[in-house]
Image 1: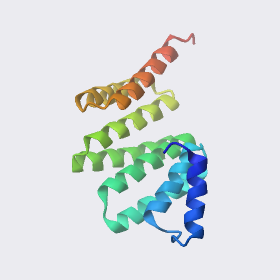
Image 2 (image 1 turned 90 degrees about the vertical axis):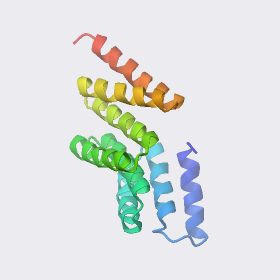
Image 3 (image 1 turned 30 degrees about the vertical axis):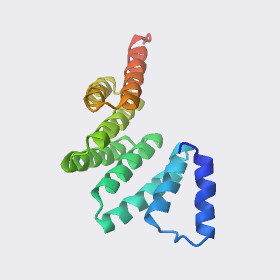
Image 4 (image 1 turned 180 degrees about the vertical axis):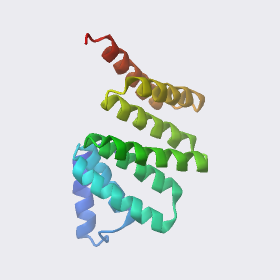
Length: 161
């Protein structure tokens, strides 16, 4: 719930209590905790494992969530092409299953990724799409996140070269 350190403590406790190390939910929770702590190496490993597990279970929603977060982890590691490939696959799955909230989330992460790599035109397009979709879906937190990304974009464009 936004506290990566506590997530790791609880995850470790779950392991001690006998939850299998490859439990799909535990793997995902631990990866999320690492991502929240900006431990991108551990997050990447966890999300790669989560994608593998969720593919075995045939759960497209969870595959897409894990792929989007894998993309965010790869962004943090500076691996642009891999990040965008994971995000593109996540976006395709979310569009296929009609999960517009997750489409919006994926667009926000993709916009953040383009912004991270100073691809300002791509970031502007993706972030604006995310904000528009978030407004249509009445997702105020996503509207705010996308708007903040667009504000950051404007600041960067205004900076002297």
